[in-house]
Length: 355
Image (cartoon, rainbow, N blue to C red):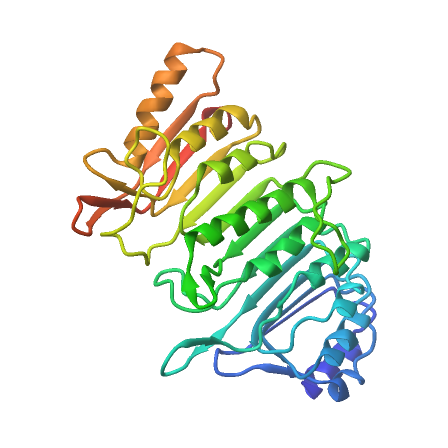
């Protein structure tokens, strides 16, 4: 790092983009002593460090103090302290934020090493800085393919509602364990609060759980969620009120006990983890939608999720020429479990107006 900083200092007034990358077994270690020699980089717009280890919160603050015009920030964490609130106040020009946490596998259980975010306070402080951030991507220490690892706590996600300028949100790995156990009822409660916070905004007082109506409607256009147990009618109903929503992508969890799963849906479909009646309402009521994608929807019986949606949309559009036209693209399906379970690797619903 001493050599890298010496190099940066030779072009401190002109450099605009810095990307540092090592292999997965190494890390860029940033401590206060090393960073004290770094000059201010007044023109730097993009910083990507993969992976990075922060020794303490003072090293985080020292780094951001030297990057007054930073717009794009990408961190992949090997080991770190949580990003402090005072660091967020220095990121008033940030537009795009990507935070990736890595984790190591203990012999007995997956364990996250050094999470960057442990509470909503970082995002609340970011809002207080006057930031006009447009996109956030959060990837925590969870293997989406297996479901193993540590997801992003809902407590952290609730603070995203304090960012009214946010247009794109990609949350890769929701934490579905509560007090060490899976609880789909609690998961839905937290999801509803999370979506309501995005829609209405949340109080930027770190000592309050009060939900307040935002001064302007949410600007969210793209929403991507990974590892959701069930997409319920109530969740989809909130999404119908997102006035700018253009793309919705939901990766359903694939590590459940498929033989014992029960359907939460109110429609006449046999989809087990997505309320398709709610999906149809979303397609009809959300006027800005261009694309909706579901990964790993589960259905029981002869009728696949994609086939149900295709038939229902065709039926409704035939009865009303005023409805927006959608095309359903199905993917590959797999048979699983003992109850005639079928899992599709993708179902894409495309608004024909946008091709």
